Structures are given as C-alpha cells and as structure tokens.
Length: 193
Image (cartoon, rainbow, N blue to C red):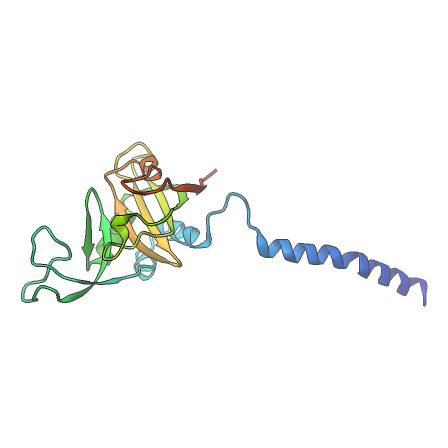
C-alpha cells in the first residue's frame, strides 16, 4: 500500500462518521425559530397576497343547508332544507358556514397584518365535535393590519396540509392564544424574531 492510498483510506474512514451524523441531523431538525412547513406555506401565501393559493389550500366540508334564518349554511332560494352544500367554516364574532371561500380568503388577505404566532392546538373541545366545524392542529395568527393591539386580528386554522377554518376579527392577536370555552391553552411553537 502506498503512502497516498494509506492517507486516502484514513481520511475516508474519518469522514464517514461526520457525514452520517450530518445526514441524521439534517433529517431530524430545523431551526428553532421556524414554523411547521404548513404554517410557513400559509404565512408565505398571505405575505404574497396569493388569493388563488389560499383558496386552493382550503378543505371544504359537506353540510346540509337550513331554512332557519339564524342557521348556517342557509339554503339558496329554491333549495329544500337538508340540501347538501360544499361549505367552509369561518367566523368573526360568531361562526358561520360559507360557500364563498374566495370572499373569505380575500377577507383574510385584507385583514391580516404581520405574522404574530403559530400555536399548536390541544384536543378539540365539545363544540368542534361532529357536526361542528373542524378544529385544526395549528392556529396561524396574524396581527391586524392596524397593529397587534387592534381587535381585528386573523387566525387561520390548519390540519394536515389544509386550511380547515378561519376567524377574521373580533379579537386581538394575543387573544387567540387564550383558551376559549372548553378549550386547552394553545401551545405557542413559533413567534417571529
């Protein structure tokens, strides 16, 4: 064996452990201050004012319509009560089901200011159990356009890779981190630096 092949062999053996450690670490971790991938995608869509991207990220639900004027979704003229609609849950001070996802996502884009936090939600409360709206795994919270202390912040709730509901207004950004009735306190997992 020559001196150069001995050196190559020794060098190769010493590099292998470092390469393996690097590969293992690269697969397991991200920066401590990065939101989950789905949350980053929604933050980017809002920052880019990408209405089509937000609409395409929505998970629609099948729900029967109602003739009750206080119910939601309301039946269109000519439809009988119980007709199935493809709808999306949203809310301001009260929740509702809408067929107009584009208008809802435009509301998100119009109201959302800077990202405020991403929180992991706990177990769904009773109100989110069937036939309630989907609860979500994460809440992506945006301060209002007029600032974090304004009561018209936005929360986009996601599960898997889809937006499952939104709330536009009726709260300051920090109030989305307080538990609602029957809810566990959300765990903040990301805040912008």
